[in-house]
Image 1 (cartoon, rainbow, N blue to C red):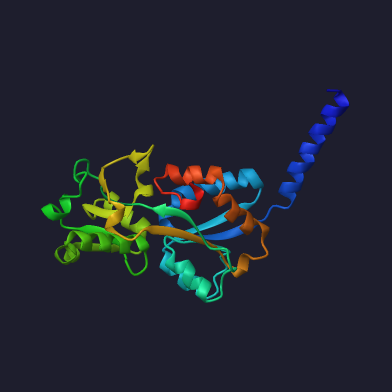
Image 2 (image 1 turned 90 degrees about the horizontal axis):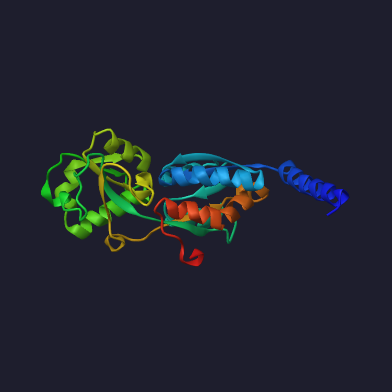
Length: 257
């Protein structure tokens, strides 16, 4: 290859990179608290790949819906369930046809104390604890899945007096990690490390004990004209993003497998 050809190739690559970054935009994203770690990684990979920036806010899916209904400027909503994005869709606040499942959540009963939780969850019926943490089931889908699990086990009425409710799954994890509750139901993604529970002890709740935790993403009307918002939703379906999602213990939507 001639020096002229090399210079031309380098110049073309530089122009391509410049054009990508010159058109870079920022999108505002409301993210369910359980998806904090993977979304932080995904946002970094997204920025490196496209030049666009995703500005993230983490919290309860239920509270985000209330904020979005009252004019919050988020352009993308990554919920912990499928119900809340569907509600916004019905209210006409989203871009038609933009909703899809980006991950399937997994629930775990976890304690920061090694050996506290057995691998079949029998600690729940043993009674060797005074506090059981879970996210508010009215606001957080993982809290709802925890209640369904206890119903399935026939333990809801017995254990309800021991509940310590977090506003969202992040606060619930904090209750357990600090010892304010001996054990609690949280998202597997919060404690997974290299494919297994990294610290303490836990029981991954069988998926048939509760309704599937399908986590849906949707483009809000506020982001309809922002190329960064459309690019991020497309990136969530890409191989690099799916690898990150799976690495944090989530199931992948059927279409992505």
